[in-house]
Image (cartoon, rainbow, N blue to C red):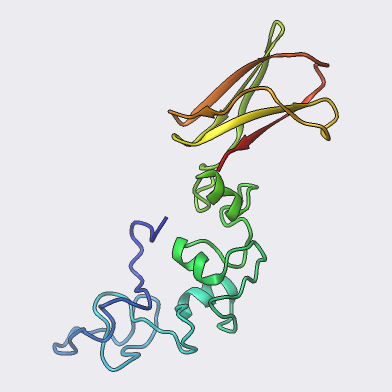
Length: 193
């Protein structure tokens, strides 16, 4: 996913670190996070002064913003979601929350589904379920290019596919299946790798 538009913080390997000019009278004493300048051998170019006092490649502002401490390493996973802090920093998700955008789907699940774990409006959701005679129609959000399979169950234990893999070409999909069991069944949508 990369850094979001309007994200002006420097990464640990940025060529802008320590190469700014200290000449002139309008050089601020702190960057836009309030971090003192300079942090290294020179002023960093731009609005951000890269600060990583524990040298773990995680900027201090980011650790304090999300974790309220700089005690974790880049390999740690404080929210136990399977994404290391370095992974969370790379995609700008919250390392202190398994579900960064609060949409009910974990960050790793959203990455697998192809949705954006930073956008609450970007997630896999059932939009409509309706009966049309002997057919059940399900409509859900989708990611173009991803494949989906609808599964059904009478007891939410034993599941069987009601469709073959369906490839999305738009931001929603629908499937109609002949109902071969009780109308009180369960349905789920599988995202294929």
